[in-house]
Image (cartoon, rainbow, N blue to C red; front, side):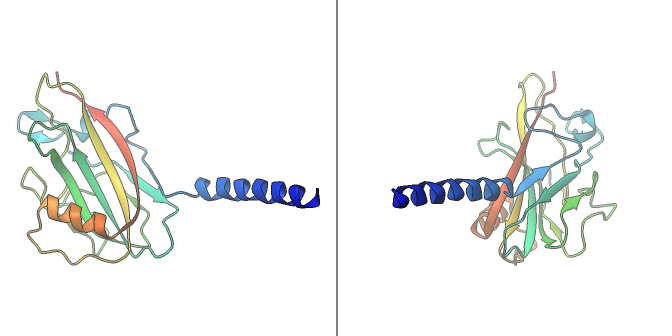
Amino acid sequence: MFSLISKVKCAVFTVLISGVASAESFLLSSNDIDTGKYMSKEHEFQGFGCTGNNISPQLSWANAPKGTEAFAVFAYDPDAPTGSGWWHWQIVNIPKNISSLEAGAGNSEKNRTPQGSVQIVNDYGVRGFGGACPPKGHGAHRYQFTVFALSKKLDLPSDASGALTGYIVKANSLAESTIEALYMRE
């Protein structure tokens, strides 16, 4: 009987510890966007027929796994009618002591990115953030903002494509967390 009670206590302790560990998972949050909610016009691109303010949203992350040496942030639209989606933003080599990006950090002209980080040329052909701009009448598009905890700083070519950057980031990712916001133009 003692053996059975000990096993039950051990199982309960394991469940409790697992619950604590899952509460500490790597998490992305934002003051500007939220999963399943529509983004404001602030985050719409300016160009290609769109008239937004092209401001990247504020993003914060917490509970990076042990061994994290840098972060990367992506903004991607899997619903773009291209056959391969649309890269709106890729920023890599964010220093490991940074845990947030302010709104507008993706504006390469204002130099608001953390020192040492690198913005990749997006599918608009611009190095930095390019806001949402789905075709009119195409319905709601999903915009996946993902932060990756990286096992090392990345050595990418200066002309790295979005696909190559995505491959290398995922190959060196320890954890990731995503906010999937929405946007639509009628």
